[in-house]
Amino acid sequence: MNYNKKSVRDVELKGKKVLCRCDFNVPVKEGVITSDVRITAALPVLRYMLEQGAAVIACSHLGKPKGEVKPALSMKIVAKRLGELLGKPVKIAESLDPVSDEALALAKSLQPGEIMLLENLRFDKGEEKNDPTFAKKLADMADLYVSDAFGTVHRAHASTAGVADYLPAVCGFLIEKELGTMGKALADPARPFVAILGGAKVSDKLNVINNLLEKVDTLIIGGGMAYTFLAAKGYGVGKSLLDSEKIDYCKDMMKKAEQKGVKLLLPVDTVVAKSFPDPIDAPIDVKTVASDAICDECMGLDIGEKTRELFADAAKTAKTVVWNGPMGVFENPTLANGTVAVAQALADSDAITIVGGGDSAAACEQLGFADKITHISTGGGASLEFLEGKELPGIACLLDK
Ligand code: ADP
Ligand code: MG
Image (tube, rainbow, N blue to C red; front, side, top):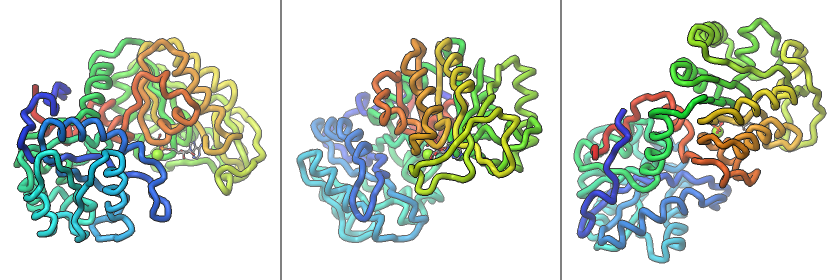
């Protein structure tokens, strides 16, 4: 896959109408945006385009409306916040249909230096289906397409890939940076190259292991991912997270690792409790047991102390480390030690360190380690697929340099 793609810096913007796919999928609680990090992240490229004399039609999805209009997921609150941050009004149509006549008319009348936001793209069934009619409607509003939502580039949706069939397509500053740092680090990684996987999206993430084993020297598995591997080793995992359909797959992966000479590190000890904390940060009684001694009524919720050392040592001696997914239920202070240890090891390491995944990135920020990490990717699933070397539709559709 070619990572050398044209960006907004490589094209004429003056007098152009630009359709800019942003990632404004912000957390919202009771109608209030609880973190505007993603909006703030988009400001530099939006300002740049506006200053260069473009008229910007920004667009994004918000939440999971699944092709139906859900007023609670309207982009109006994003338009308001974006306007406050940019210091200029962000126009948005009243209609909740992202490609309503009203929205099209607004786009048509937009002047250089002005910006508007379309309604939630996923209110239209055509978005996630990559329906060419919907893509064409979006494309018809503009002269140029700028892709800057890295979190969705692994999906071929109308606004992330489909529109590029009708418009010249370049990336914005965020994707430019992802390609520059991650692309460079992964094209010819400094070795040893260590990948650390954890988190709870077990089924999704187990699938990437097959490809990762082709690339890395050491693969570390922690978090909720680990128990399916422990089960594949014949250990009892009690009530821990388990994808029972993937046990044979994990056996194959252990064999593959051995054949390839890849070191596969699994937890040697585990922090267990009788049940999942509820609420998630509630005080909890835990004990640490060896990974082959998890009792039937126990649930593994973090890596133990010996495992922390094992994983941290591997990370510290690496030259490239990629980390995706926390090592335990880090939202609970009693169960955060594994995640803190890995974050600390990355922070202390001289290696090129790359963190992907919403929760892993949040853990680094929370712990104050973010500025000691080489690159925190803005995409979770996308960064994993990137790492696997898969062709990402939202990157492949951009113009080569
Ligand atoms: P990311 O967002 O970094 O890609 P995921 O979304 O896959 O990571 O997983 C993050 C979640 O995994 C966190 O909410 C954390 O509490 C949970 N988790 C980690 N370890 C375990 C475990 N052993 N059992 C259950 N949940 C876990
Ligand atoms: Mg997550």
